[in-house]
Amino acid sequence: MSSDACWVLVESQTGRISRESLEALSAARVLTQQTASEMVALWVGAESPEVRSAYLASVGVRRVRWVGEVAAWDPACEGLLTRIEALYRCGPPLFFLFGPTPLSLSLAPRLAAHVGAGYACRITNLRSIGGRLVMTRPLVQGTLSELLRFPAGRGGLICLSPRSFDLPKPFSNAEPLPLAVEDAAPFLPARPSSPLFEILESVREPASRVAIEDAEVVIAGGRGMRSREGFALLEQLAELLGGAVGASRIAVDLGWAPKEKLIGQTGAKVAPDLYIACGISGAHQHLQGMKHSRAVLAINTDPMAPIFRIATWGIVADAGEVIREILHRSTETENRHAATP
Image (cartoon, rainbow, N blue to C red):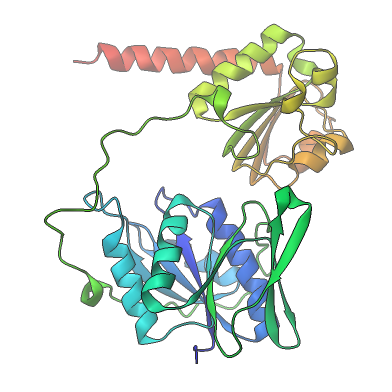
């Protein structure tokens, strides 16, 4: 029988917790409330989880296990898998949740196979019915759904579907986190003499090919971009930031952007780490398509524009001029670095 705990793999390999891990924490909080279990974070990253202890406590985490980072010499993550498997065998959790990151999608099914646990992927909803966890997974492009359960008396591994859970909202009266960072040294495997594979090259996909629903950065334009040429500036900024370009309804109706770029109640629903609203007033229809963004930068000449009410940061200025200045400064920086011997 599994222990009375719910594990969450929390990835912080870039200095901040990934959005997918935040969604997994949100799902785990719902799950722990329904099953009266304890939420435990398995921290993956070079920095100590102590730097995020206050935040982790505020979203319901009660214990943290630091399992290390992804080693450059181990692209298959065999070392990380071995560490997590050793912890799992010492005391398996009731459930183990993963956000849909490339790392989690690689680790979760392999771990399930190694330890003989159940595995469910692309899960969009979790709820307890009759004391048993019931998971929802869409079928046939979302037109149908199937309900899944693990065998009675057994837990399992769960990989969530992207953008299916909101970001967790911290509790206002969170207790201090009794942080217990466990030493991963006993579980460190020897460096393999011949790894399963090696990374030869990493290539960033052009912004023009990144789907706006999947982009971590979305630069959206509205009436304030004034023309199709204004949207060309958005494309340049998207290339610079590795993001994708979106548009408001009026920009699509005016022919400045194709219909597939429309963000809103009748268009695409996005939830990027950063949403840059350029010349967008913030009509209700548009906000419905981007309200789950992690952070919002609004640029608009009207200081009373509704978009500023939900913005993390705001700039009262002409969006085209601001973007031109960003691109200009970026070019200057690149030239200065290129001239440095």
